[in-house]
Image 1: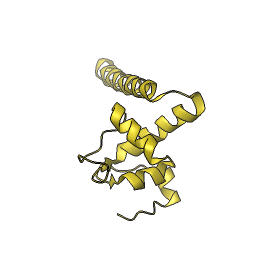
Image 2: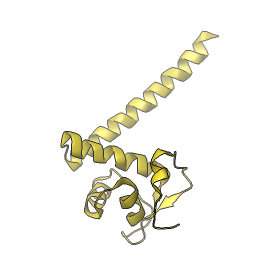
Image 3: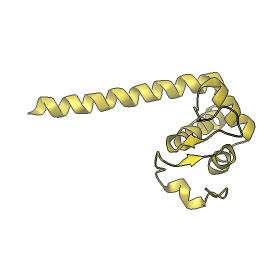
Amino acid sequence: MSTNIPSSLQGLIVEEEILLSLSELCQACRAREELITAWVMEGVLEPEGARPQEWRFAGHSLRRARLALRLTRDLEVNTAGIAVALDLMDEIATLKAQLRRLSVHTKY
C-alpha cells in the first residue's frame, strides 16, 4: 500500500480488508505517531503486529482514530477517557443494533 493516503479517502468507507501501517494511519487521520502509540498502549486501537514497525491497522481503526482525535482536540479528553468513551459508544451501537433486530422480529 502506498504511504500517500489520498485526501479522497477521508470521505470513503474503508473496508476491513485494508491494512494501514502506523505512518499511513497517522497521515490519514492527521495525528502524531506518539498519539497513535499512546492509544494503542491504552487499548483504544488494536493493531496486528508486535512492534510499531510491524503494526497494521484494520479499516475500522481509521474511523476509531479519527473519533479519538476529535475527542482529544474538541473535548480535551485524556487517553484513558477516550478508551472508556469509545468502548461505551461501541456498546451503544451494539445495543441499538440489537433493538433494531428485535423490533423487526416483533413487528411480524
